[in-house]
Amino acid sequence: MNLEKSIAALRNGGTILYPTDTIWGIGCDATIEEACQEILKIKERPEEKSFILLVDDFPMIEKYIPDFHQVCYDLADFATRPLTIIYPDAEGLAPSVLAADGSVGIRITKDPICLKLIRSIRKPIVSTSANVSGTPSPSCFEDISDSIKLKVDAVVEERLREKMTTPSQIIKIEKDGSVKIIRS
Image (cartoon, rainbow, N blue to C red):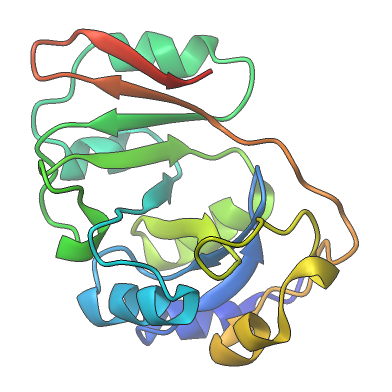
């Protein structure tokens, strides 16, 4: 697997196009505001919309979510498909990845390409669909518009022909630990 160009782009504050555990995504280091702003420009996306982040395991989440609720371990362990959890009061991340209330959506990925990218920079990466805001999400690399492909700094070249259409489940953890289902 040749991911070195994409890893270098992430380390240098750039943007990448990559396959995730759910769809093709545009990503960057989730702690670098300038890179996150570049993704907003690429997607022509309003600034008030937050991003989903990918991490490799619970310790990485705990670094950015100071009040990590116990119930999150069970929710992630028992999920039958990719699960994004929206956590309250995130810290240490780029401001544009946060929702207006300071929350952030994070998913622990099991995808080997995503894990390699995350572990190479030791930080969460942004995972937003590889489309212009308001247009359909691409199910495979060939469905991604050339305007998106030309604007990122690097493209992961593995799994170019694979179709991906499984959206993640999304739940929100409130400050009191209660759970709200956003998308099942």
